[in-house]
Length: 424
Image: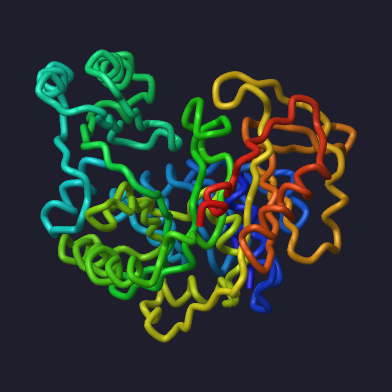
């Protein structure tokens, strides 16, 4: 079969690598893709938001199955556009992708269906938000309602910080229209855990757990980024936590969306906080996390196409989802200065070191081929270096060893990805 993947980052490279392992697949396209994806798929110069061009391409090439990797096209209704053309596509429809597209919607859903989450209020008006903050307890969390590349969340420790945050989000529009509405939420403390899941509208099958590192610098310092690294599984995600989440969060979310007339088919990403009062939902995403996909998918035993087809066809209950009994760590190699200002076009050396090495992966995020055929940097997050190991400590050591194989000018990475596992 022919498969089209929509997206251009490390997540899409991880998806493409999994798709390439399926015996059902003999041709992969990726729009727009990147230099690394281009080694296993045919990259097509069509943007992820160009729905008409994408559907026309899928029909012209007789694509059998399309996988949407990114949040923007999902929230924008790309699945509806493909289905309207009679094309088979994996991902939630627009009315279900709102689970990620509007934080206010998701918070209201959790309140209505008693799904554990932080106390909150939604605001459309900056003056009302500022008045609310005058009476609030600190620290407190401000969230832009819409999509903001994983960066629209501000943790404010003082009233002064919070006022500046409202100014930045709602008035200065730092995150564009994503800040037209804002959620003000109580600050929760505890361990963060990410759990990805496959959903077919009624059945949910959770994947192995992971933990992302969002801050740019070691010790969780610096600005929020799209993710500087991750590890899987989380040692803090115990059987007790899993049992609680299955009872009060996972199926409850799927049932709530169905009850709202928004049946969800695709990936639900649960961002959880393990608080002293039990697990609570921090956020939902409507697609694979990035870089969570880079540590979760290499550990999945199933044929990804069979699982995704089951989600589309409503037969996920017949799938036995299985993961390897090992661990994986991903270290992101970024351009120095990310996420604010950085240079592009630096030659990347050492990629050939990954060839033929079992359990080591180099997922491309911001790369391209220059006119001479060299791999060069083309973004803030450049590569996701992933390695597996029998244990998390072994996987971490392997990942950092592999991160040294690759060099480019202004290469930057955190050195403490997965360090929390040393505390267990």
